[in-house]
Length: 156
Image (cartoon, rainbow, N blue to C red):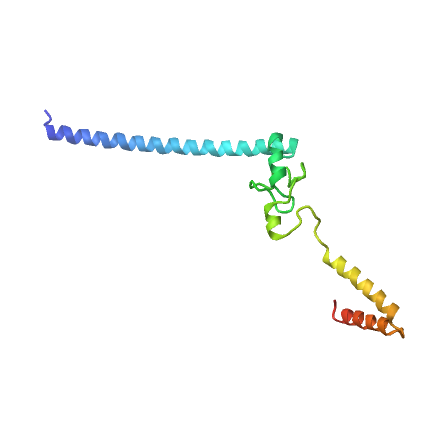
């Protein structure tokens, strides 16, 4: 017959074995849950892709107004996903300049400025003025000629 000490030792040993088994089972269940979460995330992304193909965005139409009044074609979606925003995707027009554009003094509705084109046009005008004022005996026109000549020499 087993004494009390041996019975307690056996009970402790059995309890430790049970705890080890439960830990292993818990780890396996956690792995299964993580795997299922990954599958669920993949399915959500596939669903979003299908909805985007059909509607252009996964954002419901009733929320487009919020995007139209807060997001910006130039500065992006204020809710974090430019790839899914109805404004950045040109599905709805923005209503106001965005906060970023206002702070930076940029025109959220304007086109990008082509500075090279402006420079080329300005240079052409100056060259035309220079040729028209080149052989003038009028002092005022000659002054204009010199100013234009200097501007062209300095590459404007």
